[in-house]
Image 1 (cartoon, rainbow, N blue to C red):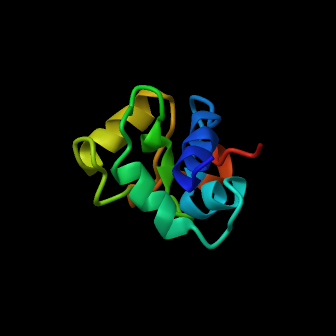
Image 2: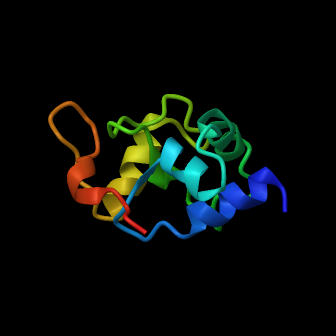
Image 3: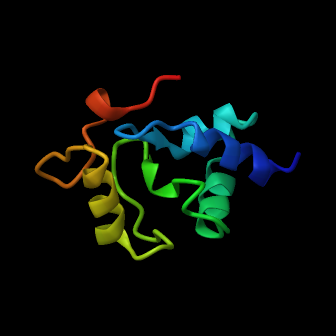
Length: 101
């Protein structure tokens, strides 16, 4: 199984209404040093309807400026549809919405 397959499998497990950080997905995929690999894999995600890459954010809840499927506003809209809330600075409230597998 490739690194991308491992990453996509981990992202598929994030439930609706929760988010995970790039580092968290890297660790779940088998290598905690793969945070940048996770970012690249999500940027080239071939099937966003199957791999909900919008549920991956930075460790402090910031959205991705490089969100590949419509930009930061689309990522926020998708998360809000999932029921995720944001603080006054536009960050996901990680203490409430971080996925804990």
